[in-house]
Length: 133
Image (tube, rainbow, N blue to C red):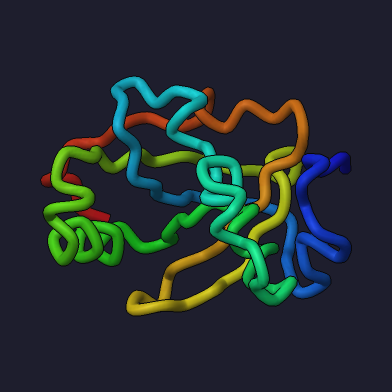
Protein backbone atom coordinates (compact mmCIF):
# COMPACT_ATOMS: atom_id res chain seq x y z
CA UNK A 1 0.00 0.00 0.00
CA UNK A 2 1.35 3.44 -0.89
CA UNK A 3 1.16 6.12 1.81
CA UNK A 4 1.26 9.90 1.39
CA UNK A 5 4.75 11.39 1.15
CA UNK A 6 4.36 13.35 4.40
CA UNK A 7 3.86 10.26 6.61
CA UNK A 8 6.84 9.74 8.93
CA UNK A 9 8.75 6.46 8.91
CA UNK A 10 6.84 3.54 10.46
CA UNK A 11 3.50 5.25 9.95
CA UNK A 12 0.93 3.77 10.15
CA UNK A 13 2.27 1.95 13.21
CA UNK A 14 2.73 -1.82 13.28
CA UNK A 15 -0.23 -2.11 15.69
CA UNK A 16 -2.68 -0.75 13.10
CA UNK A 17 -4.98 -3.24 11.38
CA UNK A 18 -6.47 -3.23 7.88
CA UNK A 19 -9.50 -0.95 7.79
CA UNK A 20 -12.82 -2.78 7.95
CA UNK A 21 -16.35 -2.26 9.15
CA UNK A 22 -18.63 0.67 9.85
CA UNK A 23 -17.15 3.94 11.10
CA UNK A 24 -18.38 7.47 11.74
CA UNK A 25 -16.75 10.83 11.01
CA UNK A 26 -17.77 14.45 11.43
CA UNK A 27 -17.96 16.25 8.07
CA UNK A 28 -18.91 19.76 6.97
CA UNK A 29 -20.51 18.83 3.65
CA UNK A 30 -23.51 16.78 2.52
CA UNK A 31 -22.59 14.84 0.56
CA UNK A 32 -19.13 14.36 2.07
CA UNK A 33 -16.29 15.74 -0.07
CA UNK A 34 -12.52 15.36 -0.29
CA UNK A 35 -11.99 18.39 1.98
CA UNK A 36 -13.84 16.53 4.77
CA UNK A 37 -11.00 14.00 4.78
CA UNK A 38 -7.99 16.27 5.19
CA UNK A 39 -5.77 15.34 8.11
CA UNK A 40 -4.56 17.70 10.82
CA UNK A 41 -1.10 17.45 9.25
CA UNK A 42 -2.43 18.47 5.83
CA UNK A 43 -4.37 21.39 7.30
CA UNK A 44 -1.51 22.63 9.48
CA UNK A 45 1.89 20.94 8.92
CA UNK A 46 3.61 23.31 11.36
CA UNK A 47 1.46 21.97 14.19
CA UNK A 48 3.67 18.85 14.17
CA UNK A 49 6.96 20.74 14.57
CA UNK A 50 9.04 19.34 17.45
CA UNK A 51 6.39 16.74 18.28
CA UNK A 52 7.26 13.06 18.87
CA UNK A 53 6.99 10.80 15.81
CA UNK A 54 3.99 8.97 17.29
CA UNK A 55 2.13 12.28 17.60
CA UNK A 56 3.06 13.29 14.06
CA UNK A 57 1.88 9.90 12.81
CA UNK A 58 -1.50 10.34 14.52
CA UNK A 59 -1.81 13.81 12.97
CA UNK A 60 -1.40 12.15 9.55
CA UNK A 61 -4.47 10.01 10.21
CA UNK A 62 -8.14 10.86 10.50
CA UNK A 63 -10.23 10.73 13.67
CA UNK A 64 -13.13 8.31 13.35
CA UNK A 65 -15.42 6.44 15.73
CA UNK A 66 -16.86 2.95 15.69
CA UNK A 67 -19.73 3.83 18.04
CA UNK A 68 -22.41 6.24 16.87
CA UNK A 69 -23.21 7.39 20.40
CA UNK A 70 -19.56 8.33 20.99
CA UNK A 71 -19.46 10.67 18.00
CA UNK A 72 -22.80 12.19 19.01
CA UNK A 73 -21.34 12.89 22.47
CA UNK A 74 -18.25 14.47 20.89
CA UNK A 75 -20.41 16.73 18.75
CA UNK A 76 -22.52 17.73 21.77
CA UNK A 77 -19.47 18.31 23.98
CA UNK A 78 -17.80 20.66 21.49
CA UNK A 79 -20.80 22.51 20.05
CA UNK A 80 -18.81 25.63 19.22
CA UNK A 81 -16.30 23.66 17.15
CA UNK A 82 -18.53 20.94 15.68
CA UNK A 83 -22.06 22.35 15.93
CA UNK A 84 -22.50 22.72 12.17
CA UNK A 85 -20.78 19.45 11.32
CA UNK A 86 -22.77 16.44 10.23
CA UNK A 87 -22.24 12.79 11.14
CA UNK A 88 -21.28 10.62 8.19
CA UNK A 89 -21.24 6.83 8.18
CA UNK A 90 -18.89 4.78 6.04
CA UNK A 91 -18.20 1.12 5.43
CA UNK A 92 -14.50 0.38 5.05
CA UNK A 93 -12.46 -2.49 3.71
CA UNK A 94 -8.70 -3.06 3.49
CA UNK A 95 -8.25 -0.96 0.33
CA UNK A 96 -9.06 2.09 2.47
CA UNK A 97 -5.93 1.75 4.57
CA UNK A 98 -5.14 1.00 8.19
CA UNK A 99 -6.95 1.77 11.42
CA UNK A 100 -6.02 1.66 15.10
CA UNK A 101 -8.05 2.11 18.27
CA UNK A 102 -6.69 5.28 19.89
CA UNK A 103 -9.14 6.00 22.71
CA UNK A 104 -9.45 9.54 23.96
CA UNK A 105 -12.51 10.69 25.89
CA UNK A 106 -14.49 8.14 23.92
CA UNK A 107 -13.39 4.51 23.83
CA UNK A 108 -14.39 3.97 20.21
CA UNK A 109 -12.04 6.68 18.86
CA UNK A 110 -9.78 5.32 16.12
CA UNK A 111 -7.06 6.82 13.96
CA UNK A 112 -7.44 5.94 10.29
CA UNK A 113 -4.57 6.24 7.81
CA UNK A 114 -5.76 6.59 4.23
CA UNK A 115 -3.51 5.47 1.36
CA UNK A 116 -2.65 7.46 -1.76
CA UNK A 117 -5.41 7.41 -4.41
CA UNK A 118 -8.13 6.27 -1.99
CA UNK A 119 -11.29 8.38 -2.13
CA UNK A 120 -12.91 7.86 1.28
CA UNK A 121 -15.68 10.39 0.70
CA UNK A 122 -17.16 7.99 -1.88
CA UNK A 123 -18.16 5.48 0.81
CA UNK A 124 -19.51 7.94 3.39
CA UNK A 125 -23.10 9.10 3.67
CA UNK A 126 -24.41 11.78 6.02
CA UNK A 127 -26.91 10.24 8.42
CA UNK A 128 -29.73 11.78 10.41
CA UNK A 129 -28.94 12.85 13.95
CA UNK A 130 -31.70 10.62 15.30
CA UNK A 131 -30.31 7.40 13.79
CA UNK A 132 -29.79 4.69 16.39
CA UNK A 133 -27.13 2.02 16.31
